[in-house]
Amino acid sequence: MAMNLRLPSDLDAKLDEIAARRHTSKHAIIIEAAARFADSESKTDRVLRIADGVTERYAGVLKRLEDA
Image 1 (cartoon, rainbow, N blue to C red):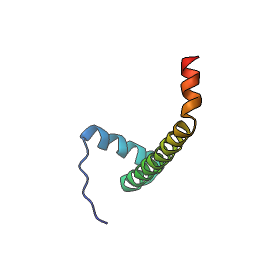
Image 2 (spheres, rainbow, N blue to C red):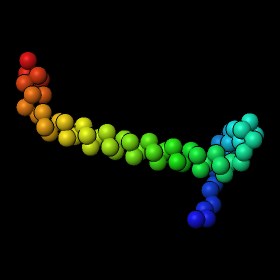
Image 3 (tube, one colour):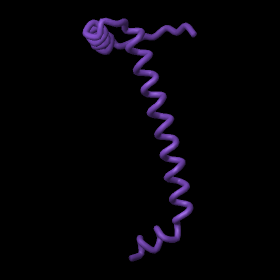
Image 4 (cartoon, rainbow, N blue to C red):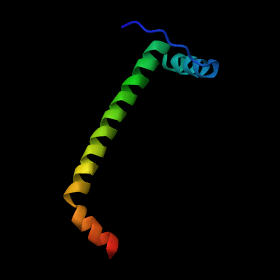
């Protein structure tokens, strides 16, 4: 899917430097960064769902520990 992206000049310059060091394009750098962000967010959502389940399952124990 086509997309236009407007970057602040300082970020654009940093991406230019990274792309030059890696011998790749800014496009490839941005795709990699977006994929990492999406993966990270997905993992965060899973961890939060698991934590909610643990909290619900052990609410009584946690309350007793809190009162101890």
